[in-house]
Every structure is written in structure tokens, then in C-alpha cells.
Image (cartoon, rainbow, N blue to C red; front, top):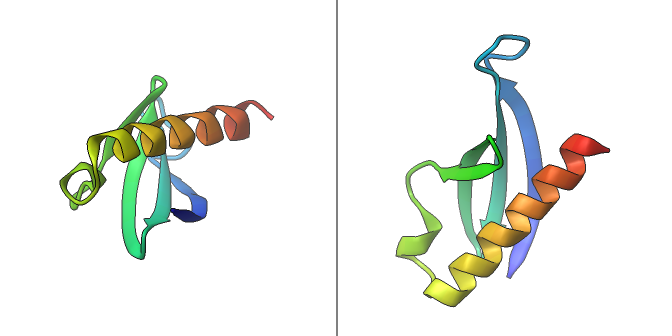
Length: 73
């Protein structure tokens, strides 16, 4: 289901409003978003328009965990 998760260069790097970007492939579709204040915010297109609610909740939790782990370690 989840493939090729990658953290991209942060938006506004080194500034107070720095945001961490990520990209991920879900079932062959590419999605991007930002992670800030422990929240996932999706760019368009958003995966919840293409996958079931339970799958979306799983994906968002997985992205959240990957970002938290990656940023803290």
C-alpha cells in the first residue's frame, strides 16, 4: 500500500515558519504534504479522495509516525 516515503527539503528552511515536506506513493498514486505541529496537511490531490476512510486513517498515522521518528532521531 505505502511505497517510497521520502522527506523533502523543508519549506522556508531555517526560518521560524519552517515546514517539513514529504512525498509518498499510495497504490501507485503520488501524494505530497507538509508536517507541522505534529499534524499532516495534504497538498492536492489528497489521498482521502482516492482511498477508503480506514485506509486513509492508517496512511495518515503511518506518515505521522515516520515523520516524528525521523525528526527526533
